[in-house]
Length: 606
Ligand code: GDP
Image (cartoon, rainbow, N blue to C red; front, side):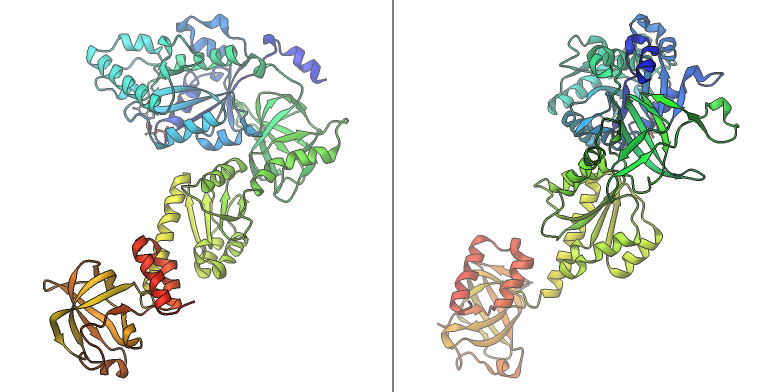
């Protein structure tokens, strides 16, 4: 009977395009969403706009009404536009299936006063990698100095009302931003000047504050989607459906919020979704949508449906959804399907993620709110510039058991006893346990902030280790005593020396290989021209003080145990080399490492 429903739909049998909003923080994504939702919503029927689960639906009539000044209504063929409510990467990365986006079109928001920002570029790369169509909303035009408000007007009309100064500033900023996009390999142009929509992306100037450009944005979204995606938007019987969120609702148990991109779902349909512990095969108990706004006082928050047709945001109740994974595809089991095949299909997304875990078993734990964001994080951690190994993954809030899992690393590699939590909450119990156990939890909702935090932590651990091992680290040096520079013969020995090779460093134990490797003590101070320094590199002439660390060393005396021609070396050992390698590798030059290798031979260290 889904055939039936299809026929009823009319409109050339196209489904509504699905739209996502992306961009840098504070560019006005939320405000823009409110604005396209809010205009005309003040009174009565809210212009037919309906709040769905996780999305807002704009019927064509509403869009026609709002864009009538643009005189383009005849072209609307789709039933409406479905805009996903959560702005940002999150929803976009979730709305996908096998790597490509289920989102038909995206709005990339850029602040006209700021131009391209880090997350603009991140979003742009994401859109490119998913081959997604998008339109740039150049938001906050009302912030141009001297802007005259022109509520909800088409942008060209609003622009004509502005002073020459405003128009000039606008032109200058647009030119700058077009150049910035060009640097990212993207051709862009103001949409009303864009003659080559396929190759050049369109920019729509907007104000989410006073509504200028919003009609243009809506119309362009619909037109562009209709013109380029007729096939993709043609209604199909095959269902295409993604789990956006897994939520516990009082009285309903665990529910899943889905976006039905294509096809029809019925109450009683058998479905399979990906679960953290394996595939979940279950039966749809109820298909729910929110009550229209005017009926909010009606008992029970949701409307029940026998069937629902794409594109829609829907809440589904069913048994056994506790471990469902957000961001994965929902599959329908028809009488012709082999249940096991469908289960395999449903678990495919999870398998891809699991394959990114480090085989050595050494690495940090990562946790994200959905499989999409988890994948994005794993992808990022794998890039050569970052290169952080991962030993465990999970989806959803960080619980005690996650901390316990991460604590296993304490024994193996302390810095990996870490949870990188991307856009998820940490329960207070988990936080307490982490504190007690010494597991670090880093939380952020921007991927590279997590990286920055972790990097800083790695550095601090390194510093700590350096401090702990400072005594044991022996830098290589080769010193020659200078004539007439014997300032004190013993306890302490004070000599003028020439640093022939390596680095003389305070704390370095000194020995004399030509005299049966006698130890004469550690360097306790270094002076250059009467100034104290900690280190002296090859080529410098310095005065050093050497103090015996024990009674035997304290006996050692210039003129009795060693002479002018005896050369002094750092006393290295197997252990000191290991410490040097582990903590000071990048502080030594190649030449200095070569000296270490030679000393190793000199001291017969295997
Ligand atoms: P998001 O982080 O991208 O979702 O940004 P928001 O929608 O929260 O907006 C960030 C700030 O910019 C808020 O204070 C908004 O009121 C303001 N804002 C958003 N759009 C506009 C606009 O078009 N004009 C002006 N003047 N302010 C805006």
